Every structure is written in structure tokens, then in C-alpha cells.
Image (tube, rainbow, N blue to C red; front, side, top):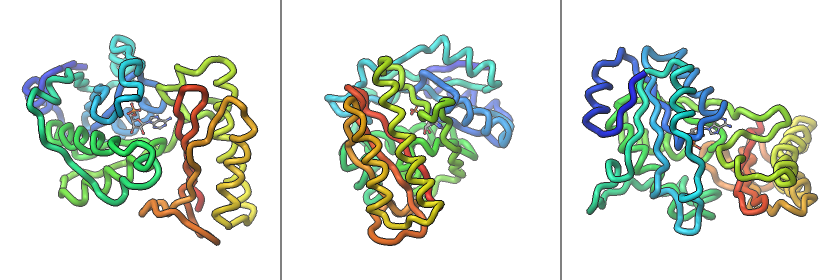
Length: 277
Ligand code: AMP
């Protein structure tokens, strides 16, 4: 596996790869969720490129950019084991040189959910992903359903800006007890880790109710909220039952839905979701 830092090194190494190229953008501190994307890319593509970049522009000033967990050596050896061909680990200045001033904005699907709570977040995500796509020029790019809105936003950007690539969305990888894997789980102490189970448990309870015939959006949101509210250490930020494609909030009887949520467990903000269909 080759490891590069600059755009010019990346372009040179990329041009030597066998096509089609699969690309997995990450912020590092890799876990099984990330590795599942790398594995799927390996199954579907002749070469796999992974980027590791903690993108400063998708963090608001009060968020956890400084403390975001990092372990490049461990990440690199995990990727080597998975058989990735190229890892790109750019410096901040490489992506955002002094006097940087260009941005990619996706308007509608960035407004609700995460966009409502983190108003500058998706501007950073779409801009960095566009820059990464321009440089890597993959035929396929792999994203996790864990960040469900991000996947919708990136698909929209790819359609709108005519990127010649396919977006592949991979299922959420969970711990054995149900907690969705996340680099931020590292922040949780023992009690918080227990309280964090309320996210997946609430979602699974609602999904079970849906499968048993409960179709009312309010009722389904209520099941999720009630489970989280049982935990003194957990504070629900939002629970949504949206249309999975448009992300518009639904009311009344639903046929399908993206049930998603954000919760503060102590200081740590966690997100999770399930698809109802
Ligand atoms: P991140 O490093 O958090 O930016 O995540 C990089 C990619 O991995 C994104 O496409 C995420 O949606 C995906 N991802 C993160 N956690 C998981 C998970 N538990 N299961 C599946 N994909 C994940």
C-alpha cells in the first residue's frame, strides 16, 4: 500500500492504479464501519483509495475538531491489512491553502436534521468531498448509511454537478449490543457507554412497532424519544421520521421512513438511524 500527502503525489500514484478505482473518504480513527466500506470497495473495484482527513471546515468553532481522535499509524496498518492500494493523508494546508475561497453548496437536502443543528457542517462536507473526488477521480465512492443525510447530500451533489461516478451506500456496522460504531464512541465513559445504547434500542423498538403495523409518524418518533428520555445521561437533540429521499419530515400515516436522531450523551454528540420500509 502506498501512502501519499500532496495533490501531486496523489495524482501520480492514482494514475498508476488499475481501473475501476473505488474511493473511501474518512476522517480516520478507523473502526469496522470504515473497514466494511474498504472491503466492499475491494470486492467491486480493481483498486481502492482511502483518504484520511479530519476536515476542519465541517466542524463549528464549538465542536470537537481539536479533540477528534487520531491514530494514523494504527489506521495505516489496518488499511494495509484490508488490502487498500493507496492511502491519502493530506495536511490541512494542502486542502485549504492560505487565501482559500471556493465552496460547494447543496441547498435543500442540507437544511433539515443535521443541517438544522449544525448549519455550517454540510458546506464543509460537500466542499471537501468535491475536492477529494476531483483529485482521486474514482469510478465508485463508498459512504456509510450511519451518516444517512450525508449520503443523500453527496448523491445530490454528484447528480447536480455531473460527477461521473457511482455513490455506494453501505449498511451501518454496529457493536454486538447494537451501538452504531463511531470514532466518537471513544469519548464515552462506562456509564455513558451504557446510556448510549438508548439510541439503537429506541430505533429498534420503533422499527419493531412499524413491522407490527404502527404507521403513525408521531407515534414512531415518540417510541424513540421515550427510550432516550429514560436515560438521565442522554439528552435528545432531535428525532425525525423523514422521507428517505427528500428528507422532508413526515406526518400521519407513513409507508416508509428514515427514522434518525441526534443525542448528547454527556458531552458527546451521537447520531443513529434506521430505515423503515
Ligand atoms: P467518518 O470517518 O466518520 O467521516 O466516516 C467515514 C465514512 O465511514 C462515512 O461514509 C461514514 O458514514 C462511514 N461510517 C462511519 N461509521 C460507520 C458505521 N458504523 N457503519 C458504516 N459506515 C460507517
